[in-house]
Length: 130
Image 1 (cartoon, helix red, strand yellow):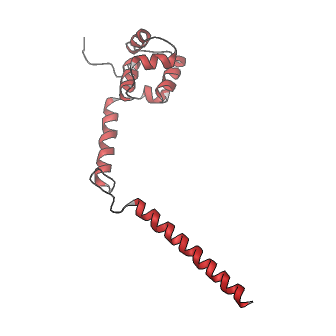
Image 2 (cartoon, helix red, strand yellow):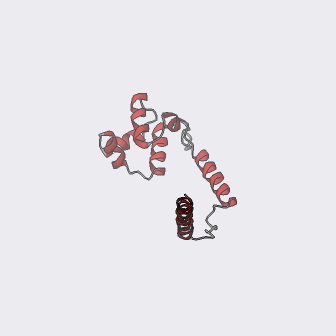
Image 3 (tube, rainbow, N blue to C red):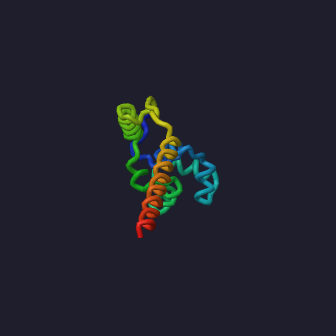
């Protein structure tokens, strides 16, 4: 008998998704209106009815297909790809803002005030000309 996990063990997939979502069995149980022991038993089940699987997917914030197609390898590939993209972009953790956003807001406000002053001055000149 092999010690490898079966690739389509729905209960284990639910367990891993729940763990990746940083959710405890108790929280999932509460969302489903059941108890922690029922969640534990469900996560040890190889198959789950489609209707129940839809409820679980909704509680976990994923689709039924996401549960059925879940694989550890795909998750690690996704995160590795994501981390490589972030580190190679300008928005990685090593990047810093080169200006103070508050300074930009003040600058914009001063420009708007100046535009209003110019408009008032122009209108006053028009009134004097008549």
